[in-house]
Image 1 (cartoon, one colour):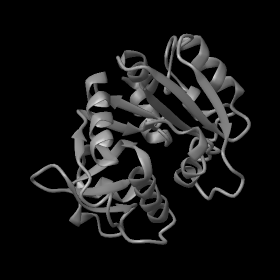
Image 2 (cartoon, helix red, strand yellow):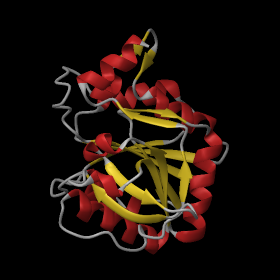
Image 3 (spheres, helix red, strand yellow):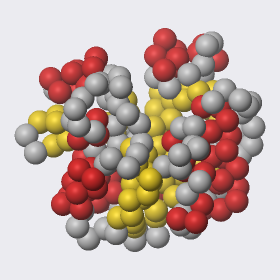
Amino acid sequence: MITFILPCAGSGTRLGLPFPKELAPLRPGCAVIDSSLDLIDKTASAKRIILLDDGDRKATADYIRRRLPEVPLARVRQHRYAADWPDGVLRLESWLGEVNVVLLPDSAYDASALVVEQLAAQARATGFALGVVRMPAESLRRFGAVTVIQDDTVRFYEDKPDHPERFNAVWGMLAFSGEIGLLGMRVIADSTRRQGVCKPPVVGAPVTWLDGWRDLGTWEAYSAEFKE
């Protein structure tokens, strides 16, 4: 069983839409979130979805149920004291499954369901794993940046680094399992708040390479994807 977590508690201020940003249309019958839902739909393992939301995502939940009516969906409001979505995931502990995969529903993925299965298998084996994509250094300041070394493991990680030249990729999805996985999520949460340094199990975590991943949370990125 894979538990897919879709963090949707953000206000979407970068786009300023009158509806949830993950429901922004890309073409007739297709919204931004469909990239994540397609991966979930095509994953062969038994699965369920946790929609981590802000209490105002009924439209998103309804959309998911229409797209994936056979996949169990739990809508959980992010804890009011959670500073950001990684901290919100940490507070989901009683909802989590054997292995958990976080997909970013305001993103576009160029990946197959086999990539998701591989990432989940890595998390089962090691506790924590990242799905990463190569990106030019000048673009890394806006994302969770990683340095991946030759054996396809993480050497460094920093959220929105001030000095991106030490990194060579960004993460677009992650998977975690058990107590080690929760420790990895704590490292991610601390880095997001710039309150900690990167350490195991994020350092040393195995990676799965994605063919592509694009954050569509800005007008520039969204409009470029829309034109395609």
